[in-house]
Length: 179
Length: 179
Image 1 (spheres, rainbow over the protein chains, first blue to last red):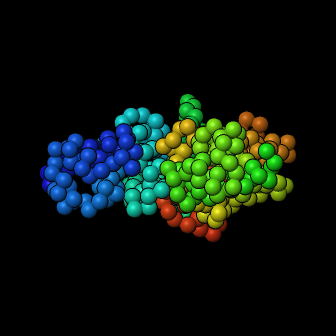
Image 2: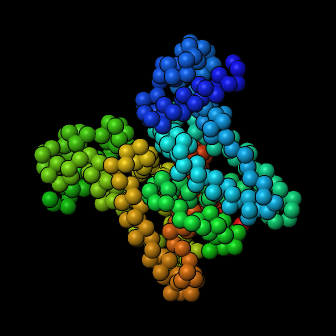
């Protein structure tokens, strides 16, 4: 399938889940909105869970390039700022909150792939920091990512509070300098 | 209403949401399971969202007493261990994951109250630490809680990975000693 057509299918998928939730997402609806035949979509993705799982990882609208600011602190602050944007700015906020919220109830919608894919890309931040001597080789990158990403999710989604100015700096400083 | 009857209604509510999800939760179902008249339940809680919101905060099965071990480090490790149990051990895991997952899609189910209530009780950990001279008065307790609770949610719910042995110690040490 042409990459552009694929992105149109992913766009339609993510828009539908943002508008109608996972229960309202159907391959028929995606076919209608993207103008691609339903049987063609099923040939590539055997279920709506597979389609949404692929869209979460491969859609340009949720594209993720790990920051490279020259320092671990700068990279982590940029990472947290990106997570805040992802979960609070449109179009990504409605998409991410609806899809990740649904993944909790629908294990067949494999959110683990989304997190594993992002973590594979985030690792280079930590590899560079170890190479620069900013971070011990024994440090646990997944723990750092889970602390930071989890704090953003808790604050803006579960508490429904804004991340105040300086939230990213304060969160990273708590980790790098201690509370 | 007698406290014991109220707890029976909360139990029925939480069991139903764990079994059937938020969409499958009905006041009729709670009435049937608890043996309390539907109109009586509606007199106390005007909607299923209000009923589940109250159950999340007031049900004994989700009861929460902040740890008091004598040190900030010990209290935070016990807090994280409690969060891991909440999200991985039954009966609380199915309840908490279903209810908090649903809250993302249903703002009328006010998860903020659950988090605000817990945070109000967690504050004493930080108040005691400041009084003991273990923590600067300028420290941000909500940030610490969001980092720790968020890391548990990310790891065990979104990533679907077990929290390895020593996860609570490592997470708290990252915050108190720096990464």
